[in-house]
Length: 392
Ligand code: FES
Ligand SMILES: [Fe+2]
Image (cartoon, rainbow, N blue to C red; front, side, top):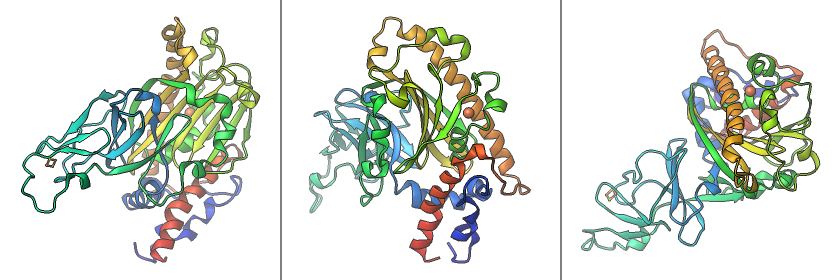
C-alpha cells in the first residue's frame, strides 16, 4: 500500500475517534473496497481471536465441524482424550483440501481424515498416520508432517481461533468479560439451533446494526415488542462493549408468545436477572444474553460485500432436558428467525446504498453511541496497525 494512499492514512479516520454526537461514520470505502477488505483480513482477522462456534456442538471424541474463515479452511474437532483442537484443512503432501465443503450447522464424527488426492491419513490429533508410497523419499519422517495446528481457546464454551502465534491469550483479549457475564453460566449452555445466512453486506454493517437500538422502530416495529426500555452503555475492560436493557422477563420471545417462557437460567442474578445484555466481542461477534437464554451472531467475512451470518441459539442444559423443550423452544426460534431476517434485509439495503459513488460519510445520533467505539477499534487494528507495519 502506497504511503500516500488516504485509505491507509490514519488521519482519514479522525471523524470516528470521537463520541457519537461529534463523530462521523466510517467512509463508504471501508464497507465496499476490496483493498480495504484485504487489509482487514491481514491486520485484523489474521491477528485477533475470532469466535467460530460453541464447544458443546462437538461433545464426543472424534466429533468435528469445518468452516472457511476469511478464506482459510479449518477443521475443529474433539480429540480422543476429549481436548478441543483446530487444524488447517489442507494436506501436508501437496496441499489438497482434506474435508470437502463446510459443516456449519451440523457436525460429523471420525477416527481420522483421509486426503482425497493420494490417500494420506491423519489422526484426530492431527498426526500423519499413513502415507503410502513415501518409503523411498529421502529424509522424510512422517512425524514432521502432521496437520498444521491453529490456536484454539475456549471461554465459557465459546471457541475462538487465532492465526497469530504471537497474539496474547484469549483471556487477555476478553479482559473483564468473563466476570461481567458470569451470571449466565455460559459453560452449561447447549446450542440447540444454528441458522446460516448469506447476506450481501459488509461484516461491519451487520455488527453495527446489532449494537444500536435506533433502528428498532423502523426495522422491527411489527415484530419485536418495543416497550420503553432503559438502555445504557456498560463499562468494559478488554475487547468488548455492551448495551444493557433493563426490563422484566425474557427478550427472546415475541410479545404474543410470552406465556411460553422458560424458567430463568439457574442461578441467574444481578443485572442478568433484570434485563438483557447485548455484547459485542470485537471484532465481529454479538451475544444476546437475556434471563432465560443466550443467542449469538457469528460473522464470517466473505468479501467486502458479502458476509455469512451464523446465528446460534443456546439454552441452559436443565432447560433442554424438559419434556416440553422442543414445543416451547419453537416460539423462541420464531422470534429469532423473524428479527434476524429483518436485520439481514436492512443490512443488504444499507450495503446497496453504500456502494453508490454518491454516498458520503454521515453523522450519528446519540442512540448510536457504540458505533464510533466499534469503528475506532477496527481502525486501530486495521489502518493504524497497518500504518505502523508499513511506516505510513
Ligand atoms: S495432496 Fe493429500 S495426499 Fe497428496
Ligand atoms: Fe435489529
